[in-house]
Image (cartoon, rainbow, N blue to C red; front, top):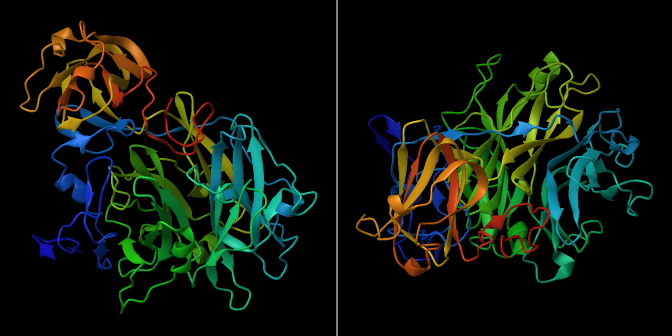
Amino acid sequence: MKISGIFVALTVFTPFISAQTLHNGITLPQQWPPHYEESTVRHEMPLPYLKNKPLVIPINTGRQLFVDDFLISETNLSPVYHTPKYYEGNPVLEPDKDWEKTVEGALYAAPFSDGIWYDEKYGKYRMWYLAGAGTIHKDERQTFYTCYAESNDGKIWEKVNQDIVPGTNIVDTCNRDAAVIWLDREATDPAKRWKFFNVERRKEDRRWQYVLKYSADGIHWSKGVAQSGDIGDRSTAFYNPFTKKWVLSLRASALASSRSRTYAEHADPEVLVSVAHRTRKDADDKFVKFWFSPDDKELRHEKYPEVEPGIYNFDAIAYESVMLGFYSAWAGPENRVCERDGIQKRNVISLGYSRDGFHFSRPTHQPFMNVDETEGAWNWGNMQSVAGVPLIVGDSLYFYSSGRRLSKIMWDSHTSTGLATLRRDGFVSMHADKEEGYVLSEKLSFDGKYLFVNADVRKGELLVEVLDEQGLPIEGFTKKDCIVMKKANSTKELIVWKNRKDLSTLSGKNIRLKFYLSDGDLYSFWISPWLSGASRGYTAGGGPGLDPKGIDIE
């Protein structure tokens, strides 16, 4: 459809019968995932849950993040989009073993999605990564398999030798491209706690396909329990705990871009892998749906401005009350040009956010994790996201990525792994200068007691007022009753009123929250059943001291 010169994607829905109502009040249509016609032009993904918000938003699951306007009715504050700080000791993992080289000596030691998790049951940071497989697969220049490392602090990593290939840290020898090793915290069968979605090359025709394997320890893997049809090489997987579905993020070609994505989901990962395949354009598919193409705001390469940007990969994970999406945003140039010019292609990692697991907003296209095109930089180019991140380490989030140096051995080689840190919940803040501003929420419902905020209040103040459904201040919870948060920087600050230490008298009622802020930044809020401030949200890749179930609970 074209309206006033703007192309709009049409979504075909069956009559609006509830298929599932999510934790945040969003009701999915009966036809889910939605059917979108393949993009012929570049446009941003539609966000139906922002156009038609729930009348009342339940906030019982997780910290409530200001990553879009979902929670906001009115505000005169400005959103600020933050980026993590690279660890000064990067890279934290480099290729330094003979078995991490290809047959021509090209170096690889970094996740290609793969996985970096904190395993609370094991008490370690754990990493799976792609390495050069020249010691085993000698029939091609570029072959890869999977290796393993672990850490006590997430910064110093040890390549721990295993018994798969004695004397090495190789844990799977299959010739592969991308892979995802997922810690299934909801697994009822201990033998399936770790799930390995490996994109393996078939010897017979050199085509790529998913092979799903299970493991109790992440080291010793079962024989493949499911296999897909032919797929694109840079295809990955993730789990959406809000819908209880496994999702495949499939590399695909669309009319708008040859670097687009298709989508498939299912509650059973074996069924999901079994139905995955490339799709043809003259037929619909029951399971594999067109998802998205690069949009019209993608960043261009200043040295190769003629290159149309693409999406090289897309990973996702649940964090608190939202899904985080990691775009490997490709700006070129093409491989033959990279080889000619002796450079790495440019992939940067940008961030998106979703309230339903399918539609992702991208409030900014600026890199969340950027390349560093200086001589010797570990991340000169071709950065790729990692499954499992972020990890929650105290008041910080740990993000890992792969990066590639300039290489004279093989232009696309020499991968290593880097770390960057961000304030907990620190993706977007609502910012106030010296003059007081406000954020008024939509109508909310809750069943907790204690109101917490994540805020940095410098020389100003933060106060919170509770309003009824009609927008009138509730006695005892007014602005003048609120105990001021002043000159404080906390990722978990309890808000109380003079004669009201909690919100228990309002539990089950519909309310609005009005935040008054000066000279500070507000990152999130939530209402917890516990004085500890545990949010009941999802803790992504986990972290020291967190619950092994992957939920922030006491």
